[in-house]
Every structure is written in structure tokens, then in C-alpha cells.
Length: 613
Image (cartoon, rainbow, N blue to C red; front, side, top):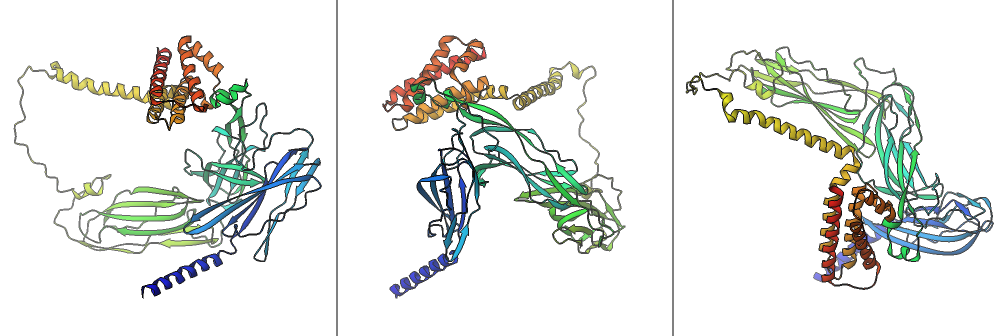
């Protein structure tokens, strides 16, 4: 019996696996790109063909177009990766074909084709230019960002910003999602916005983005780029006609390699000694949007300009109450569109209800390319007369651009049974909450009968120390709060001041990491952490990027700040030991690392005293 059960389980598993493979037989896509579209004569370039999908591993080899007129084939290679998402296998296979440019001029790499399960899939042609001369060095086929070579200024095709709108034609108050993408084939150390896009005529909602942008890969004109989304927003046009979204300005620091000064510099020195950055100013394209006016046909008389897909609901917290007992009526509008500009609902409350101004709350959700959310109105009501009271349905007229039509939404009718209460009719002042309204008529003021603590005549309160202490303490707290606020403002506005204040804490954290790796097996990590502690401290104190610090410049700046020469020499000697130990095959013991850590901490302490005195 047990063997039969196992047999049926195996049959079921095999059948499930067969059905999965069969259903994914058509799951295959192909794309082609080159590592550079501008190539020097007799230089090498690589044509990459990427097959992806569940059938990528079983697909036949692609058929390349004829390229004998302008290129000579050198060789090929391939790589393959597997990924499982929700139980489904995805395969990515990249085949790299290496060529040597042999003829000048403008050429075109034709479509690459793959035949799979009787279907032919092909890529788009790729234009390339072959020029006479050395040209710029091509990045590797992987498409990873590279440092610009020494003495070479990156061209506009290697680093640029593109603004994209999800729609070019919309109705008034219909959202347009604008995304700003940074395309790069270089190593971008940092970036900052220098000019915000001009959005006159639009209501703007920003999409929150992570502090560290997520990157992806895209192929444009046959070249692969690393792409990062640096800004995303939803724009709601407030009027009709042609609207222009102005360009956005960005400043990027591109990491550039320095020429080394000797054979041993290349071996021992890292980016702290050799790296520098080059500043690039970029500007995105402007975007023109055609905004159509809302149609007149079918427009409801009470339409107030709401555009989107919405729903409306109404409710009360209790339907059976007594007179003078406060209740809450809640109106909720939720959906996709400009939530913030929704008008207050037109509600017809019974004349026997005392109604207080609503408390309004807004919850905005930004996901994908959609702006949605909820707007809630809470009214405090106090019935004054017993009987059956009704709140009439609340109407909301909207225009749905997806359906290209007007719709009128409404809540259900709300019935409230009011019984006579025991409390007398009380006049209620405005501006009270529901809980405060509930207590009206119950707050009896009793006459105080306890002793009031009489004082002898001639005893002045201001002559006591406690009086002055109570008077001065708030002033001291206010002064301390003012100083702390100035400190926080300076930390936000003054980058050099903020980095200088955090320098010591960052160095201590690095030294703690070095102490945790003070073992024979982790000696490389130990010396790397000590090196980062020293270079990071000097970079923060001098307001320099660690990747762009040059030893001669650092020495000069430290001497200008009055640091003694022996202190500077000791710090750089420690850095030299770190470089030697990190790249030398020789091993060291824990006692030597302990002594060196103490030496480095002492050198940094002397440097800190010299800089802060």
C-alpha cells in the first residue's frame, strides 16, 4: 500500500513538472547590444546577444547578420544564470561575439535572429560608426560603469538625463507621471539637483525615492547603460492647452583615474592616492503635454472639476441616540486622482441637528505610476429634538478619463433614531470635539470648602529663591533649545561643518571594525579598516571626497592648518603600512596588529588635537 502511494505521488510530481515545462515553452525573449557604437579603426568591439526566459537554456544559437564588409570575427564566449521567482524558473543566457573594426564609415549591424519552436524572433538593427584613429577605450561587455581614463573627457553619450512622461495627451486634472532617469556608462561618485523642473500650471505630487537610487540596465541605440531613477512626480494640469514641463538640472561627480607616478604606486596605492572626480553639469529634455478641456456633453450641474476614479461612502458611529448626545458622521472618498483638491461634500443635515465644522484627514498612496488615497471628513452632530432623523445621500460628480464619461456617485441614506434624553437643552459653543460636547451639562462646579492656605501679610513671594529658580529655568531651556537648533541648522546647511563634527565618530567606528577583525585570517580586512579610519577622518575634516584625495594635496592642506610635520608623517607612515600589509603576501600575527592599532589610534589622536586646538 505504501509503495502504491509513493508511486502515485511520483506520477503527480512528474505530471506537474511536465505541465510547467509545456506551459513555458513560448517564454523566450532576445535583445542585442554593443559595448560601443563609436569605434576606432582596427579596434575591437563586442556584440552581446542576450536570451532570457524559461526557454533560454533550450533555445538554439542565434544567427548573426553578415558583417564581413566592416568587421573581422575574432572569437566568442557565453555566460548563463538561473533565477527562481514564485516557483518559476527564469534563465538568462548572454553570448558575446568579439570583432575587429576593419572599414571606416557608418555601418549597420543587421538583425540577430533565433528560431525556437517554429517561431523566428529577431532584434532591431544597431547603427555603429568606425573612425580612423585610436578613439576612446571601450568599456567591458558587462555594461558595468567604468572610471573615465586619465586625460579623457566623457562625451554626452556616456552620461545624460532623460525625462519621460507616461502620457502625452491628458484631460484637465488627469495625472501625468514624469520620471527623470540618469543614464550612465561611467562611474558616478555622487550627484545633486541644481535646477528643479518648471511646473507652472500643474499641481505636483512627489513620489518618495530611496536615498540610494535603485539601478537597472537599459539598451539605447544598441548601447547598454546603467539607469537610476533620480526623481519621479505626478503632475495634475490645472488648465487646458499646451503645457511645458521645464528641464531639470543635475550636477554629477564622475570618478576619473589619475596617471600613476611610478611602478610601485600602481601596486601599493589605492583610490585614495590615485582617484579624483570630474564634475559634469547635465540638463534633461523639456516635455510638452497636450491638455484637453473636459467635455461639455453629459456634464452634471453639480460637477466641481473632480477627475479620476473614486467611490464615496457615509456612516455614523451609532444610529440610536438621545438628545444632546454627540455622534460622529463620517464621509469617506477614496480612489485614484488628485486627493488633496477634493472639495468638501455638500451634506444636508437635519435642521434639528447642531453641526460642527468637520475634521479632515488625507492619506496619499504612491505606488507604481498611480496616485491614490483617501480623504475623510468627520462631523460632530448633536441632535436637539427626539424622533426619526435622516441624513440625505451625499452626491459627488466626477469625470472618469478611462471611461471618457461623467459619473455621479452617492452615499446611502442614513437614518438615526433620537430618543428624549434626561439632560436639559444646553447651548453648545463652537469648536468643541465630540468628547467635549458629550460632557456639556455634566460639569457641575462644586464650591471648594478646603483650606486655601492663607499666608502672613508681609511675606513676598519674589523674595524667595524658588521663585527666581522657576522664573529662570524656562529661559535656560529656551537658550539651550536655540543653540541646539542653530547646531542642527548648520549641520544641514554646512556640509564641511557636518563632516567635521562626524569625523571622530566615524573614525572610532572604523577602529572598532578593525579591532573585531584582529585575527590572522582577517588581517587584510583589519588593515583595510585602519586605512579607512585614517583616510575617512582626514576626508571629513578637510571636506574632501575620499575617492578624490591626493596625498600631496592632503599634506599641503594639513600643514596650512598648522598640523606639525611629525604628526603628518606619522599618519602617512601608518597608511603606508596598511597598503603594504593589504597587498603583500606576507602574514603577520595578532600581537603585531594590536601594537599597530594602538599606534594608529595614537597618531589619529595627535592629529585630532592639532586640528581642533
